[in-house]
Length: 543
Image (cartoon, rainbow, N blue to C red; front, top):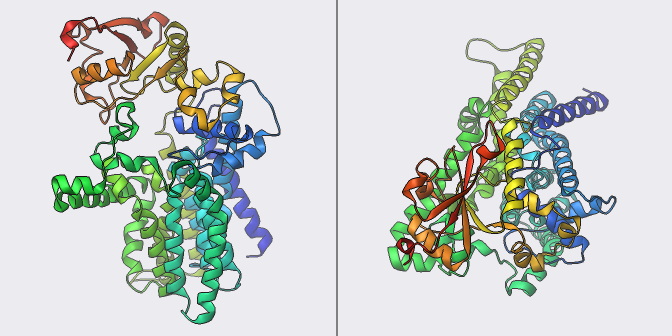
């Protein structure tokens, strides 16, 4: 296949991938993820000459967005969110090209195109790309770093690999593990002679030069170049403690947990549980089609697969290394999108099975050249159809419930001010509504002042409080000026407020909660929610 035809095929896959991702987006409806708004706001922080590092995020994606934001001006916050969405979708779709190059390290042209199709049609990646998050560019850089570390044709490729690895750290802080992964792959792939060790030294310098501005800034702000805020509360074992206002000053380390509960309990709760949850998450994100090939590919990777052992070893190093950093985190909160960067490696493993079957056939027969092409073409059609069917399981962004949620949120934001707890997906658009209330408001954002920014007394502000019962929530809420509780008919977030699940249907059992607004007032058809004001004067809820 000549290069012109190949580029045409990959370009077609890119267009198909982008078209599929459009299903997940309605540019008139904002995304529901607070992270989406956070990245946009931090872009304005950069445009306002504030390069402060957030406690839990990095500024690589906002720095990239700031290049494009500087070319236009709008009074609508959603315009900036949609720009970030489009860029994320374009980057995700364009990742088909480096994915093909990575696959070519293992397979021939035709099989590599199939691997690229697996990536281009992957429903989870398509859905994620429409939310203006940093995963798309992080995955793009991860693929490039992996591709260049395995490229032996050009001696300079390893330097490019470590450069892309450094850029990946700017996008997501867990990218730091990449330096360890690339180091192991380098030592596994190349001879450890003086010449290669000198090359590695240069690679390490390049990596450190790329990430040094970020590390220096973190050290200046927090006194620790590797600071990441979740570490202070993480080992309480309760995800709520990471998010909550009332636990932000808690300092509970791994050694504190071990001293209190013992090493065996620590191993069970944070290591074994984390590994199990990662395996479960991989199985879940392997649907709809990777699950059909991945088990066989894993088995083949330990047997004669027709691929160089050094490449298979490097693949496993990159996969396990990229997952290992999340073992402890997944023991508490198995957020599947955090391991989406493992998709390229899972796809390569899955494609091993296709490579084996098409090249060697089955025990009873082998494929002719024409039959191989027919099988691969049929497989591509199967992948596309399966992806489309699976994509339909996601709610369309134009679904009426999103519009009703937005209307509900806009209404209560005008009626009430103060702090409110969202028991579960009732106020997904509250932050957007507050931000979109005034162009001067969101454009003035600076990371260094973000706490004051999100506690505007003139707004209705969502607050997260860690509690184990409604009585404890009320007691803590009194200290933190909690005014309202929002619940909806569908239910509550079980990981956050399971004890609030009864309020919607049995409000009369809670005399200290006064219903002040109900979605029924707006004649909404699909979304049903209630707002309760806490009556602290009721003596039954005092400590």
